Length: 427
Ligand SMILES: Cc1cc2nc3c(=O)[nH]c(=O)nc-3n(C[C@H](O)[C@H](O)[C@H](O)COP(=O)(O)OP(=O)(O)OC[C@H]3O[C@@H](n4cnc5c(N)ncnc54)[C@H](O)[C@@H]3O)c2cc1C
Image 1 (cartoon, rainbow, N blue to C red):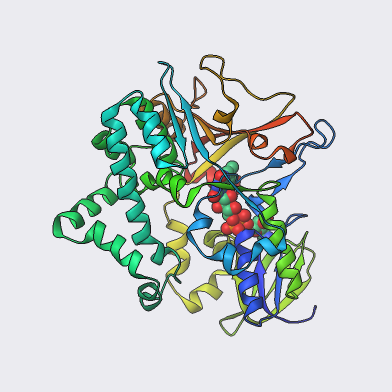
Image 2 (image 1 turned 135 degrees about the horizontal axis):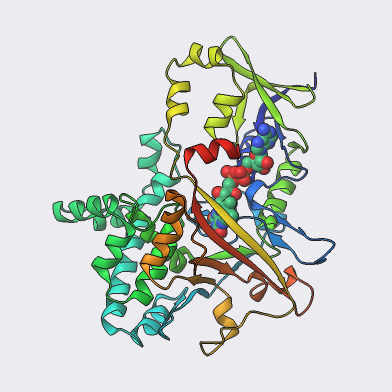
């Protein structure tokens, strides 16, 4: 039996670390237990090929940071004092089209509109309206995003004058409200068709929307249209040194506040006493006690179905186990990702190459149909390996510190859908 903590957190992903930092600032004693040998979860940067590619640092998962800039975490936790430096990208997307056109998105809306205008003045004008609409929608949604999920009062308190203006500009009249509701209920594909004519523009916007984890045709995911709007404001950035630099800053902060992070600790069981979580047991049998509670940085299914006995859950909520067990997860996406160590940068041989095209995300999205296939084919048991859509980043173009001098890395992501049965097998 180890010493007692107020709170034990299962998993030291970046969300677990942020949670720990706020609890420590509020005066709680916090222990984080991490299964891997390092903290960070899906937000690490690692020298994954030390023998074959020494000095090349790879982001194992997350690379382009946008959502974090919609909330106050980086500023409130003063992460720059702990070494975090965000490098914003002025060029955010390049998507070469086979017909010679291309979509070149800049952080600046004006520059992006000017690029689209070269090929389609009509779509350029519509793109400005589209971006302004979705930015207002984001402004209207941020207060909900940054409030505890249960508290209407807290949500209301998060609306300042600017956010109230945004809210009224998207739902300020019956027709605007109906439009907004319809946009929420429809698919990214329908939204792109409604606004634009040109495939060179629709396809990359559909690809970004599908990053939410569903094909462009998926109804009720029109909200994916915000994914490009966010790259204009608040912008897209990467921590200097890789995504892991965000985790490094959080780890330093947590430790400076007295938090304890133990790695190689795989939690197997949440300990329950009288209907309350009082600690955890890790592989090997060690138990850690928590006087106030246990917080999970892992998904609800694994927490409640694998770390708790059926009777323990039923005593608190008789339906919870069944609801979680039957919850539909068949559009949970799995991602196939490839990392490359390169002796020279990639080149667009069929377009007039400019290195700056490689600063943002490079999207291979020739058509909305190609993006659809990348997400949809695996759902019917096929692999979209014939000319697949992809999302590619050369992080070393913006941050050369991530590879030996003159060398580069490439991060390539392909999406595939996993059916529930596969998900269980993977587990
Ligand atoms: C390939 C890929 C690319 C991505 N790209 C982006 C991107 O560009 N931009 C972006 O914003 N997001 C991206 N994401 C999503 C982003 O990485 C995740 O949403 C985020 O990292 C999740 O953080 P988390 O702390 O909630 O969970 P996790 O990072 O999953 O942390 C959970 C932690 O719990 C630990 N754990 C699990 N089981 C146990 C156990 N039994 N005991 C103890 N510890 C345990 C895990 O090891 C892990 O460290 C990407 C994800 C993937 C997979």
